[in-house]
Amino acid sequence: MVLAILASGCVRVPDLRAPDSFFTENPAKKVAVFSSGRVDWPRMAGKEALLGLAESKQALETITPAICSALKAKGYDVVLCEPAGIAYYNPSYKENWVVEREGGGREWQLKDKEPAYLYPALQKDPQLSQALRNIHEKMELDLSKRQWARFVPEKDDLQVVMKATGADTICLSRIHGGKFSTARKAGALATTVALAMVGVSGPLVSDWTELSLSCASLVTGEVLWQYARTVSVDPVVPGDALVPPALEYFPDKDKPLDAKYKKEKRKTNEQDIAKQR
Image (cartoon, rainbow, N blue to C red; front, side, top):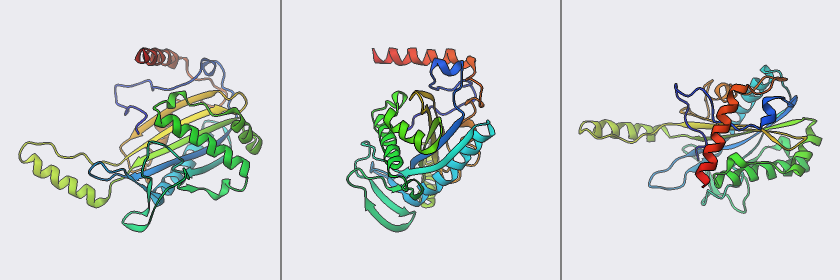
């Protein structure tokens, strides 16, 4: 499920979501960052991808602190920085098979809308854990309906987060990646070479990672910022190709969003309205 158009050299202004108020005042001071997501092993013949648990953990535990470091560099007080869970319920996935690690390990099927994994650090506070689950599951539901741009967390859940963390802003990062095995890549390359000899294009097999960010005021419940970035990198080791570009347009602390993005935002909204007619 790809949320953002791949960035290219000719694109200067991102397709981001922000309210008009964020162009005049930035209320975010103390930020709590929570991440979720999944890394999939795509399968052939139209089969649903397998969720790689080990790879998902590696991705979240690599990218989450990178996001927090980037926000700190912009001057924000990051009061909490934690991965929350892997594979919160999303109705787009019908089979929900999980593999412990590439090439082996236990396999099981998720049932009863349970996440594949919840991080222990956030389970010590049951109210916070449930509020975060509510927020992430609402986001996944909106994603399944292709309505991520309309995602707004419930105010009651945000109040729980504010009370538990002391933050004034929550930033949710969702990491979604596709990873191909070495054998699959080698097979695709061999097929491509063979087909090229007769003038036919071969299969395209490439790892990819998408990072989507939603930041909302815990005080008002308003979504202040929403943006997604997709790049062709291994989700387990994305390097600097993912987080810095994803937060490039996010304003520094005490600075509003640059006004030059406002026209593009309105243009995008007009396009969305036109599509609905």
